[in-house]
Image 1 (cartoon, rainbow, N blue to C red):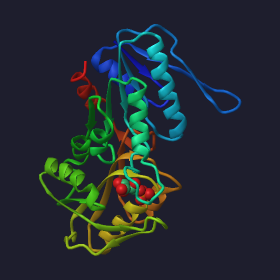
Image 2: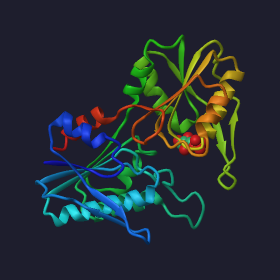
Image 3: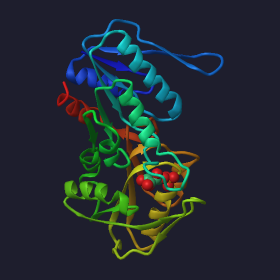
Length: 291
Ligand code: R5P
């Protein structure tokens, strides 16, 4: 068995290799002058190859690199390929919101399967049902909310876990259960054309509570900024923010801190200055079920 680290494994491949005592190989990657991606696996592979690549920015290039490595691994006669994708990009477009749009998560998953991936492990995919909908190979969605809860354990006064919208409620619930506290969600409206987001008045009482806002992704930070402002305006004591995938586009962190957040933390599925919680141990455990 081998663990193959691609250019955006973010150290997760090396950690899995160490935890499970599986030899690590690093794939070579370069870019041709015209922008095409070249990869090479520099040595022979064992029967099972575990390929690790996060689809963080530049997500489309990283996806091509992953596909090339899957094909290269097949060419080296490995018998079984398990792909670990800590951040699975393009997952938010999981249906046709407007006529004429593609379902991008379908493209990603179906392409992986058609290239001969035997199993897939990812972390906190936007909608878990996408895996069932578009894959027939074994797939596992690992959730990092125990680890996120441990990070905050004994740090907060009267914590309340808040999802910035109904879609994130399950995530808030998981953190709250670990912290033995309550949870709720904000009502959010997003205009699909302009992208404008408004937080509707909610019924929860955040007064004098330390709030942990939990979401799967922080992209521009707009959603979290609104939730942070709203919690503080309604009397919250402090606001902490946690997410799985810290994409942090266009000054997202500045926006969130300016809204009054005390701390923002994320897992290491995406490289960022706040990626302090590693998903590698959880991924290694999930992998044990497949090997
Ligand atoms: C949306 O459904 C996701 O769960 C996140 O709430 C969203 O991607 C965050 O985006 P942004 O940081 O740009 O508000």
